[in-house]
Length: 247
Ligand code: ADP
Ligand code: MG
Image 1 (cartoon, rainbow, N blue to C red):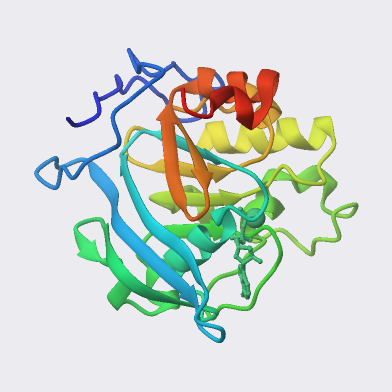
Image 2: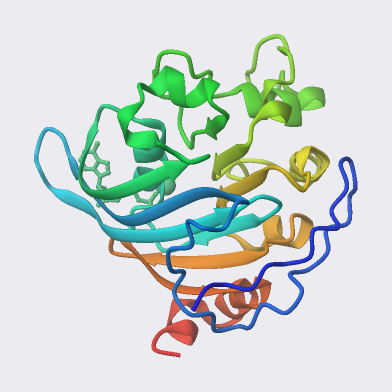
């Protein structure tokens, strides 16, 4: 069963994001829907190991992101969230051992990291890493313009992220105070259109109060074990991971 399409009513620079039309709390795992023309990213059975140790971190990730959607990935420390985003951008620490990733109709895994970036996949990493062609802090630079000095950022560059078709934001909220968080939320909400999408990784509900996710995924041990709407993040905040286990 495919996921239902939320209504695309989001406007550029709009602060208010509509909730997913009727996303149930329990949504069937997302299945392939390549026939759907507004699929931006389609990840199927993605497995990956740490290049050096061969330790398997990603153990079969399935995820479909359509244009106009905001996806949040939550999960305990060490569940593989950052690894997933780094594998998508082609970080050399990891090697894909199975599965497929189609981005805008093309095989993403075939492309060099700098090509991925220029094809419209933008990443903001939890901690800066060196990848040719990818300036990790571009997004935060823009989002936290007013606070760049306190964040130790250099001069603001062009707002490249506004052109990203898929912005992957790994814990952009970590270490930010409430005001800075609002700036980030404003920037993210401002860049959302019916054509692009955001995949954000966060530990905290507070970011999701400002940036309403269409879908929330819970990651555990290298897999997405649960998908729901924004209320899943609320459940998580109120009851912890135990509250959503085996539900
Ligand atoms: P999360 O972002 O969900 O906290 P990570 O993706 O950072 O999780 O890490 C998942 C697991 O993979 C952890 O056990 C971590 O130690 C391991 N791991 C991730 N990257 C590496 C690496 N480059 N070398 C060795 N182990 C790694
Ligand atoms: Mg992480």
